[in-house]
Structure formats: C-alpha cells, structure tokens
Image (cartoon, rainbow, N blue to C red; front, side, top):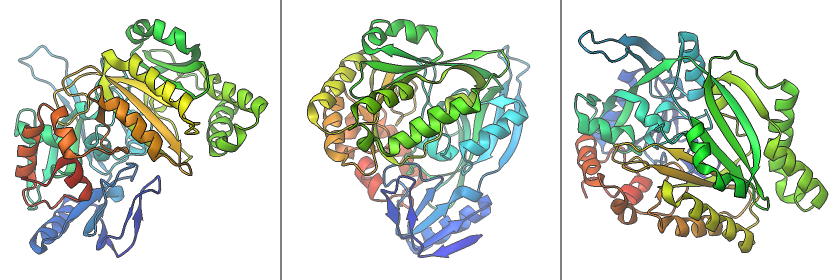
Amino acid sequence: MAEVKRARWTNWAGNQSAAPLQIHQPRTEDELLAVVRRAAQQGERVKAVGSGHSFTSIALTDGHLLDLTQYNRVIESTTDRDPERSEPARHLVTVQSGIRLKELNPQLWDLGYSMTNLGDVAYQSISGAMSTGTHGTGKDVGSIATQVRALRVITGDGEVVECSMDHERELFQAARVGVGAAGLISTVTLEVEPAFNLRAQEVLVSADDLFANMDSYLEENEHFEFFWFPGSDNALTKRNNRTTDEATPLPRWREFVTDEIVGHRYMAHATKLLRVPGLRMKLRSLLEGARGEYVERSYKVFTSERKIPFYEMEYFIPSEHAREAFERVRVLIDRSGFGVVMPIEMRWVAPDDIPLSTAEGRPTTSIAIHMLKHQEFQPYFEAVETIMTEYEGRPHWGKLHFQTHRSLAPLYPQWDAYQAARARLDGRGTFANEYTDRVLGAVGG
C-alpha cells in the first residue's frame, strides 16, 4: 500500500485542504482495516476521500487520510431470482467504494447494465456520491443511495459489518447517507438495470411558460430539470426520456462549440465578457439553447464535464414551494448586485425513507446556486440560505452551507435513529472531524 507522510490534500474546487499525518492508498479491504485498526488503537482519526468533489470540509483530517482512488474494482455481477416470487429478477453489481462513477458506468455498460439515475457530474466516487445524498432529477426517481442494496461497512473499531434492508437494517439505513460519519464504506452493492439509451432534449423556453406548464413538464418526462441564467427571461430545459432508438450523438463540432467554447471558456471569463452588451446577449443565447436533441447512452446524457472551478450551494425543499422559492431567489439576484453569472439549477427527487436523505419523507425539489471561484460567494449563499430555511430546506451534505446540528436536527424525522446507528458504527469517533461535529454533533452527544 502506497503511503505519503505529511503531504497536503486539496479538494477539486480548491477551497478545502488538509495536511494529514499520513495519506494511504489502499487497494484491498485488508489494507483499509489495517489503517483503521492501527488508528483506533492509537486514538487517531481516519477520513476517506474519493475524488474530492465535495465543497465542504467533510474529508479533512490531521490524522490518517484514506485516498480510495486505487480501491476501485468491480467485484462481481449477479442476477438475483426468487423462484417463489413473481417479481422480476434483480441485477446486482458489487464494487469497491472508491470507484468513480466515470469509471464505473462504462464498465456497467460493457456488462449490459445502466444505473437507474445519476447526478449531473461523474467525478465522484460511488461511496462519496451515496454518502452525501447525490441525486439526479425525476419526480419519481430517488437519489443514488436508493439504488444501493447492500454494504460492507468498517466500524470505528476496525470490524466489518455486512448490512442490507434484510440484515442490520438500522445500520444500513444510516450508512447509505452517512455523511462520512456512519462507518467507512468498503463495498457497495447496487441494483442496476439492462442498459438503456436516453433521448435528450435541451430546449429554451420562457420562464413564464416554464412555470405555467410545470406540471406537464414533470408528468411527461422521466427526468426534467432547468437552468435559469441571471438577467434572462428564458430558461434552458433538459428533458431526458428512455428510448429504444439507436444512439445519435451530437456532432463533435456542435458539442465543442456548446461545451468547450461557449460553456467552459465563456464561464471562465464571464465577469469580463458580460460587460460587453452585444457579446453578452449572443454568447448567452448560445449557452442557453444550442444543443437541441440527441440520443446517447444513459450515463453520457445524465452527466457532463465541469472544467471551470466554482462554488455551489444546493437546498432541498418540499416541491409545493418550488415556484415561490425560485421567484424569490430570482428577485434577490436582480436586486442584490452580487454579480451572479452562473445559473440557478432546479431538479426534482422522489421521496425515500433514508434517515439523513435530503428527500426523506417528502416529494422534493432542489435549488442549486453557483459562483465562480474568484468571486465572493458568501453574501449570496447566506441570503439564499435564509430564503430556503423558511421552507424547511435541507442542505446538500457535500455542498456549501452554514447550518449546524442544532438547526438541522429538527428537519429530519429520523435524526435520532441515525445517531443511534452512528454510535454503534463509530462510538469512539474514529471517522469524525470538525465538519461532522458541526453538522451532526459529537458522536454519542
């Protein structure tokens, strides 16, 4: 196992860094166990990191940092059939927790499978995406954690617990969205589907039309979301639906123009370019509506690249308040002078029963806001957070927010159940850090 002493670690956005006692790069579960057991005996802390795509300090430690980028194998693929039940067969794939979604999904495709849903980037490790409640969009589709069927979890004492909905259910439920504090995930078993293509339609509509016809957009599309760019009367809608049609990808020139030139390079210099009125409107028009319609593998449609560093906050509110909350944020941006150039993104998530899921117990709409890395983000984010708290908003666990366990606990009906399971999985706080102490409270406290 490769080990590095006193090297600095920095996340993708560049806003979080740490100087761990030691950085370990395990390849096997035995190597994971060795680090945890040694740290537990010496009273030291351990944190795991996948791709570092979280914007928070969730992975920081001055103890042992487990870099899981080499712990990334697909272990097995099975079909689960119960001859005594009429339910369809389940396709299960078990993977090591450090595998990144951009590595996993092409391998799943080669095996003949797709994940039911994905978020809009593929950089995250499967355990990082699951543990922070990462999601895609679709009013009838849950987060990535809802696709998990079993886990192997390492406790703070260095023992291994196998759990699922049928075995150690309370521990399984806590670990699915564990916020890095309910044990260390070793392996993840996902339920997957036969591979499918998606027909993507990226269409510009007026903001007024969008909300006048919102129910239709949600009912008629399996996956629906939109982006609104400050200063525009329009919104870019994205509608993704399954199809048996063969893939017809975007022409490469068109993908290059919309993603590379207009998207990444425009965003990198947006604060300067937007001072030129004519260029501003032309570029924004291209950015908002140039891609059109195409058919591609599901994972290629669900995800896209993010080359320009930015900061993000995302809140999850009951869907019945979505329009009102969006309008308030839009008015805030128009009146504030914050200089916002990056979009508001709105997505939908089906309710689930996972204790710390941001969609637990209610149909949910997420509202995400962004700021370019060189811009001052905190006044804007704090103002939006104030609006979201009026709708019992729950923050994304991997994105920036200013909440503490005192303000968060009332938002989660199963908070105490999570804390009880967390105490069983890590009673000594081996996997705790300042972030988990802030948002979850001290273990056993």
